[in-house]
Image (cartoon, rainbow, N blue to C red; front, side, top):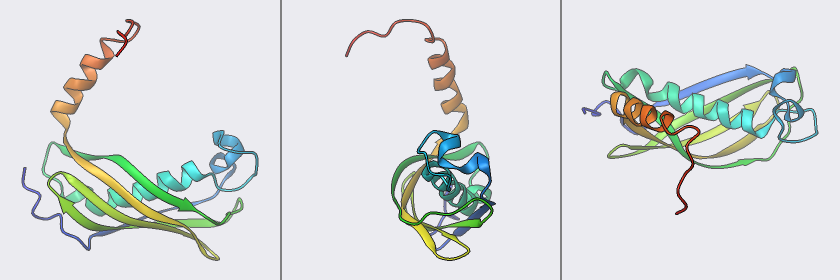
Amino acid sequence: MDTTQLKPGLKGSAEIVVGEQHTAPHVGSGRVRVLATPVMVNLMEAAALHAVEGLLPAGYQTVGTHLDLKHYAATPVGMRVRAYAELTQVEKRTLTFSVHAEDEKERIGEGIHERIIINLERFDQRMQEKIGLIGKSRKPS
């Protein structure tokens, strides 16, 4: 797998206008009608994905594996939110991003996000094996 194009400094972004479907009560993460933290997380992951997805070799993709984030300002319905990601480290298959999100007034969250590069064929094989276990009882560890 050739990942020589994946270098620190690559950037991506993603944005939404907060709708009812993005609020904490709608996604089940709270009762206050503002941007839900899980939606902000999704936006940050999308920004990281956009930073690198066109540079991956054929048959490879990234999946999120770690998040260390703070969400410290609320955003009301109707306001635009944009997330930004910058690739800061490439270590074998692990990509580390600095991420943050802003609404039209202020920065609302920030943190670190890691993604790992996967071979889609091998990943799909493992998922098919796992699907075969659906409904079968798992032996205790």
